[in-house]
Every structure is written in structure tokens, then in C-alpha cells.
Image 1: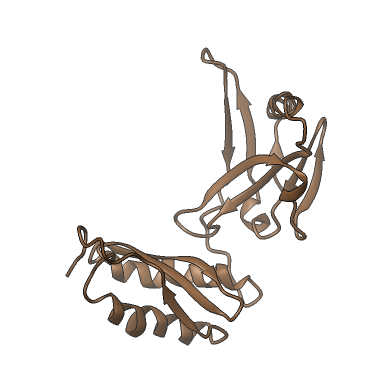
Image 2 (image 1 turned 60 degrees about the vertical axis):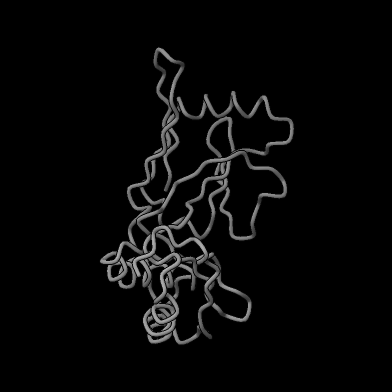
Length: 191
């Protein structure tokens, strides 16, 4: 699980004491299991709690961990080091970018796994990439293209013949994909 050092606990407790409505901190990872994974720590207020959050007490602070992020937070360390400029809070999560997916993983994680490990390496040859924005209730993956794919004249073919085909073959519960990219910006387009 996550280790929050004593110095980090003291620092966070001091910050929390200045917040009237903060219940503690919430730790989560944006885009877990991908190359773009970012480990985040934020004040946790009443409306921030989610059903699958896991609560842990650390001395004088309470931390909630996003349930979806938990496998990626294994062996994570939150530390605070004082220095001449005041100090620095650091979060190290060595497993944040490691793909940890199986048939029981959330659909978003499985889509990201396919995009970052199979689709994006092919798009990178043209300076492009694609990322998942969300999965709709009716099981469509909403995607955003970037780099050489944004504004490219071949993006429709790439979307339907490449990305959608690959995702549907591996994740049959998906109904399809939709592109939300503004393709009017052609400054980086490959074609």
C-alpha cells in the first residue's frame, strides 16, 4: 500500500489545518497504466469522495485512495523534504505507468492498454497519437487524436479501419468509437 512518511504527514496536516472544509487528502492516478500516468494528491472534500475510495488513517491525517488507482499505487511513497526554499512534497508511484489489465479490469483501463501498447506505436511512425477521453453509457469509446493525426486527411480511415477495428476485436463489449478531435487545425497533420 501507500507509505506516507512522518514528515509528509506533518506537512499535509499543516496544509489541511488551513482548509475549513477539507476532510483529508485524496490520492489518485490520472490515466493509470499508461505512459501518461500522473500521480495526484489533492484536498478531499465531501463531494470528492467516490463509492470505491479506500480510507486510511495516517497519524493526524486521513487519506482516501481512488479504488481504480489502487493497483497502480502499490509501493507508492509520499514524502516531504525540507530545503532552503521551504520544502518539497514528492509522490513516487513506481507502478503508475505499468499496464495491469485483465478481463476483470475496468473497460477504460483495457482500452488504454490497447491504445498505448498497440495503436499508438503504429501512429507514432507518423508523429500521431490517440487517447481515450471517456466511455459513454452506451459503450462507445470517445477518442482524441493528437500530433500528426490531428487534421490529417486520413484520420477517418485510421479511426475506422485501424483504431476501431483493433479495439472491437479485443474488446467486443464496445459498440464503436467516436472522434472528438478538432481536425480544423492542420498545422501538424501528417497528410
